[in-house]
Length: 133
Image (cartoon, rainbow, N blue to C red; front, side):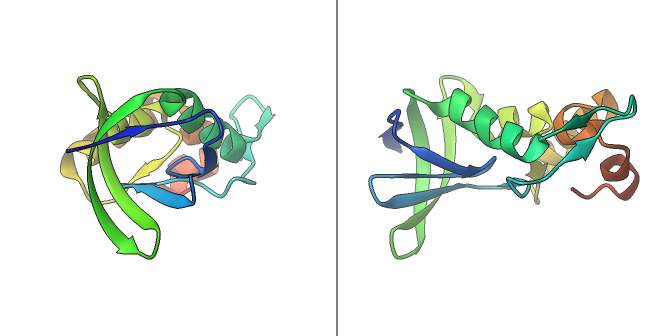
């Protein structure tokens, strides 16, 4: 396990990746929406859900110690699967509805629950209908 202390200066690219000290960290098993994505809720309201996804990641990890399994995937780029205490970061992100699960069966079940609750991206009827965001 690797400990990563996320500094306030860390920059979130989207809801599933961030940069710190010249390194890019990509959270395993999730994919964040385009940071410019706009969502249209059933009540007609419009939200900047892409930037909300990025902000949620930043608020979740900022100034925290992450306990991670890490593996390099490119020069200065690392895939990470992390926990904050007893909580898996990827599961918390998927449960928020602000990122999609990619392949982990447990996370896909969490995503289905987020969709049912219309959390995050899933407030957008188009996302729910196509099951893509």
